[in-house]
Image (cartoon, rainbow, N blue to C red; front, side, top):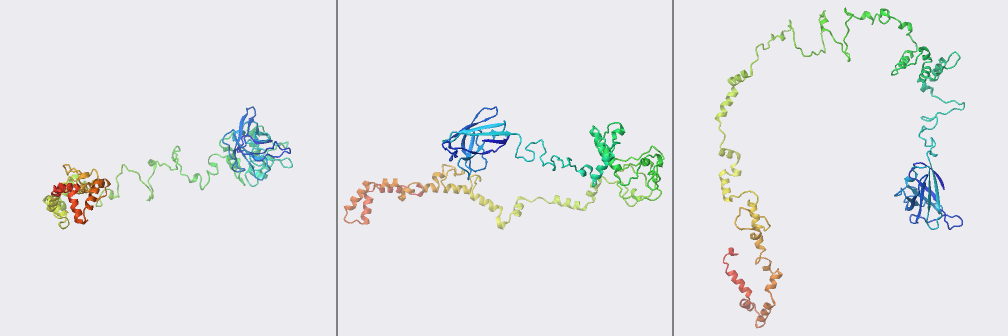
Amino acid sequence: MKLQLVKGETSVILTVFILDSSSAVGAGLAGLDQTSSIVGGYLKRNGTGVALAVDENVTTEGTYEAPSAAGKVRIGTPANMTAGTYELHFHNDLFTTADWVTITLGGAANMAPLLIEVQLTSVNPNDAVRMGMTALPNATPDSVGGLPTEDANGRVSADATAVSGDATAADNLELIIENAKGADHKILISTDAQDLKATLTVGSYLKGILTTALTETGGYLAAGFKKFFNVETPVATAETVNQTGDAYAVVAHADHGNAKLVRSTTPANTLDVAATGEAGLDFNNINAATGATTLTNITVPIVTTVGTTTTNTDMRGTDGAYTGTPPTVGEIRTEMEGGGTKLTAVHAVIPATAPPTNTQFEARSLATADYGTAANQTTLLNRIGAFTGTGLNTILGFLKALMSKAGGLTPSDVGGTYDNTTDSVEAIRDTAPLGTAMRGTDSAALASVCTEERLARLDAAVTTRSSHSAANVRTEMDSNSTKLANLDATISSRATPGAF
């Protein structure tokens, strides 16, 4: 099997036909996949063989899936194809370099050896424009960006409008060529590219006139020719330009020539014009105006010296403005202190008004009906006691210490050996004899009270009596129960609740 690929082509899928070696009629071998133990290798020109293993499958027919390594190949079975047709997905490294690659595969049961020869080319036969050759224009010949072609008469077409630049391009080009012909009706073409350009542009062999190479800076020469000759009805001639002195037509013009200029009496004087267009004035040579002149939109900069005025009285302070020496700061303060009635009144009130006492301040700050007097507050604080007022040493802290047995709630203000974990109401409640043992819910306490011996003694005492009345039972319990006797002795010895 011989194929041709572009050198460096990637995502290559090759469709192959694998023969069944056990078939006498050349049938294809069906049922091959990534588990069929197909192995082989590939060899590039002037290289060494590299092992291949077809042990990865294709999940989507016709969609390239890169093998996990260069030595791996994926295999898939295209739909609707004759038995023995498979698609092989090769790694991109196989076709990057060299001129050709030879691939051999085999190894599966009844599989005839498969030989694949791939020619790697630098041109792309599937590229209808330039066959992948990047040195050629990537456009259809005779189109924009493409190579020029000849017509039936062997002529290369040219865009005359693009050459000349105006609507009558063809006529202009023909005129230029006609003017460039010599006596023998041949176009004067020089081997110098600059000369050829000048000849075809202005229809004259300029180097033949100037006897030297024509040079140009920044397109000035071409722009000058275009500007000078691009006039439908020329009025300027060499004779018009060749004038000197005041005889020149523009200089002698009655409306805008020398007659309208006022010349300086000193020929060396010039007008000083800045780069931005402003003209400077020589104030030493400005004469007085012959009549009244009104100036508008004039901005005067800082004036350092003003001459004596003769008619403007407001500049001298003679129109009612203050003409004396301005007062100093000290003089203003003295006047304010001596003659200011408001300041005098305020000064008289402030020293005579003493600040309020604590009693006055408290009386004005707290409404008696809402908060009580200061004396009442002091009495209340004395009756509550001198709590430290921080941490657990507050009323809330004391209440928590009395009620809860949780650790760390004993205020330091309590003193002594009091510990809320053992001495609080909650701790006393949960400690025998006030604990669960007294309510009959503690199995250990019940076992110690109701032993078999005590139950047998109670049963014997009850059965020996003809009448099992409540009184008889009580009498027996009082006489023979050591637990009741011990309990009675303990309770009787504690006369007050504090003994507990």
